[in-house]
Length: 621
Image 1: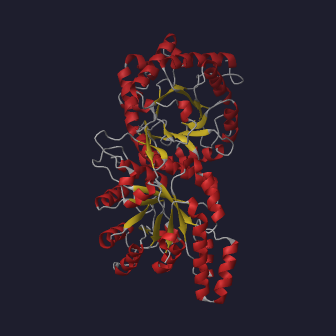
Image 2: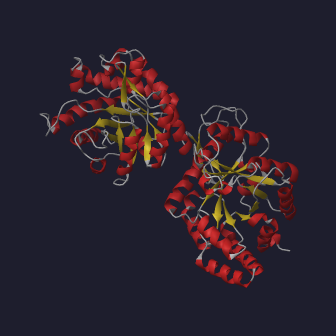
């Protein structure tokens, strides 16, 4: 298993377990017991709970030692068992974790006031934390989790205590009130800066409040630190129901906030009071959909990616054997394709007749968009099947995350594989508000990174929950990328994640600025997979204006705008000819730096798209 310190250097998102006390109470242990002592008297029960969280998808489990400090154990007459309780707790967790899950030594507040609010000195506090940390370290923990602290002076001593005995990573978590500050009034910005300066490896929040307030505080914390963030909220605030306290946040609600935590920069996500394995299971599903989480490395189209362990009886189809399209890409050959929209109604003859021209011309594939710009058309999947069955040219099916939940996407992908489709381009999808039906709802259970991960799992014989599906799919996985993104750093980071998730090639947004594309290619050299450039032959100045101003991610350079304006002022035909000339120039300028081209067919005009290929020697008349 990779050392946890090395894991901190990656962008992987990790799931932490949920509440130990909640589960012990649910299993019949009354609250007047010392829960930490159960490590000695009933270790099997503690191990059982650890195992339940691991099965739910936790990457990190915490030892059952939140209250195993001298002062808290003294209340039960157990202060003399401090070392034994912590040592055994770590060993119990270690046995449950095996070599697939990390163990965090859990350390909570001392339960006594320290200076300047109480009589306990900083040195005394540090020694008490040190005694607990030494026993946990001896028991074999991978990291330490300092949690539920309200006093920054106290957690500072806990950090110092751990640093005196080892250099294992430290997750330092404060707890806040409903106003977003600690009970001492310390703001998230202030305690984050201090924890950063004091050497915490991960800074976070746990307990106290539910996910909504935690999210608001995380957004403030992100602004003042570059350290990784963690979030382990309660399942809401407890409610009194006929004298009993219940936490009301459902697993589904918690999983929605897990996605929001990720968007706010959190890399460690779990739960505290009231959270159960059911909560962690759905949180894990959300995290898995957004970030590849794996145990084995494989080679894919020139890039090293990670996937879950393939069932031993499954033969993964090599990339070059998945399709003719995939074979050319795997061999480093240049591929050509044209993007053709699905028909607007049920009659597909006109669309299929135009695609037949592509086959006759020797084009390698036809790209079938999936609801581009949120337009309502025939299913891209159905169109792709008709193309392959009736025309005999390979299709590249665009598949987006907008319209289907996880179960629907899984069903579609399995059905596509059964129908013989092999090439897929994974995209997030345009939101419905862009189209003619702005009141339509979007799903977006996952984005294109998560969907890439899902398709890669299917190629290794596993569904999203790591359950065997029998014969694996054999998709050649492509992703979209935008070299002209406004936030190019974020675009490159997402591209890195897509490659890690299993992407074998990428198709760009329409390229009008070739220098911009070259710059992008230089910046992704460390994760380079075959890049297929999108080329859009402009037909008029108005067409150029529309693309530049109304199509997200497309930038038409000022010089091209000027050329299209001047040509279009002459005549419609002159504008069309200038657009074709620009497309050919762009293709030739980047031909030696890309591994393929996707030409869009403006307004469905396939013949016009084919004229762009005449710039290539293999298509010249």
